[in-house]
Length: 224
Ligand code: BEZ
Image (cartoon, rainbow, N blue to C red):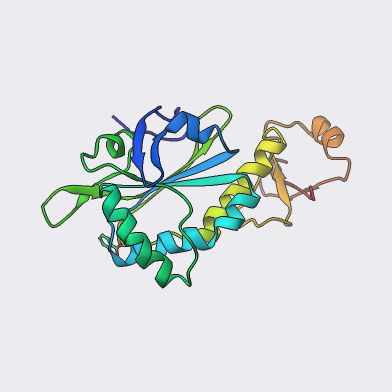
């Protein structure tokens, strides 16, 4: 059975964190979007750089109405000790977001964050680098990344996909963002929008790519 993925509702779990107990639905209610992300283990190199980078990008996430929640199988005491290393390594950026503790892996399993291949020194499975972006309005997963322990995530890519999700959501999904898109660049008009509708919806105009198929589905417009 596939685990939690795009379109699923986030389970309403109550988890212990470095900021006390948190009920997930109450937490995601507080922001437009919440990034729930797991890491394989405290006091490991890639994880230290990732959680530090999350802290360094905190203002950029907050500007976008986005909050964070980390997750691993380590306990709260371990997280609190490790946070000192994260902050020291990353130029002193404070880890202001909570990190959940799930030593029994009950929640990590339900959140589809367990790596089948990666084990800790006691032979227990550890989380992958999973990342779910949850919409606070309907509590559904809008985007998921799943990376192995050996690949650290790119926070610029996390910001980019947040900008894409927000742009598509504002337009009620009448536009989408193409490959390598960045804010300020042209977007594409969704295939569900007919040419007649597109003329009404995008008075600024749009360019249709000339394709060998002669189909007119690849339409670029500027929405800034
Ligand atoms: C790391 O964070 O560096 C790491 C954690 C688990 C396995 C491999 C790398």
